[in-house]
Amino acid sequence: MADPYATSRGYLVVGGTHGIGEATVRLLAQEITHTVVFCGRDKDAGTRLSNELSAGNTHFVPVDITVDESVDALFDALPGLLPHFDGAFNSAGVIGTDTILRGTRFHDSEEGHFDQVFAVNVKGMWRCLRHELRLMSAARGGSIVNCASVAGLRAADSLSVSYTASKHAVIGMTRALAAEYARDGVRVNAVCPGVIDTRMLGGLRDRLLVDLRRKNPGASVGSPAQVAEAVAFLLSERSSYVNGTALTVDAGGLHGAL
Image (spheres, rainbow, N blue to C red):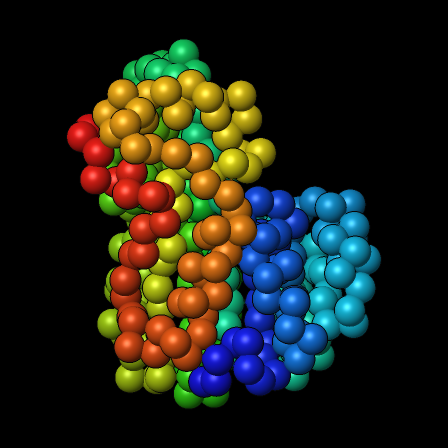
């Protein structure tokens, strides 16, 4: 695979209408030789972003990754939108509400909410990965980046139990698939952001930052663009010797005491 900033490349960003996914779409689309297909449930946001970029090399497809038929339709359409399929970033995710920062203890949390988090963060990614790996293994090459979290590498009382468990699962899938598909020339890595300033945080941004700084005075809030740069690296040939890793992008916050 060639460097993503050097030659024509085809990318898919799942969950590309907001946050880290949106920032990655913007970054990849800066190179006019790239073709970027991105998807998400927010049709209005996806259409606005596609129109804003309007370089002719970005395509938005409305998709709900919790629905088999919706994901199937995306990958049925993909060959007609991408000249070739070089990389995929699986960014779609939701955050849990079963955390003491939101005033909910685990024993009072609802089963339906736990199921919702796993339906998106784990099962939805699973659906996309099956299609991505089928195409890339047949082509004997490609790079996949899954959006995990520092919550997938540690546990803290400020983090949702359902979200933490789901991101541990994402890293587990990443490592297992990296081992299986290396023989096909396909790399599978994960990016693990710390506290990133996206709408997912909602009203918890300042409270979460205070809590993190109590444990690590150097903790800070990052931007989606900073994570996008790490994703672009993992998608590129510059990371050709990197496979099965969980790359933290958190200004060293992971090293703080729990």
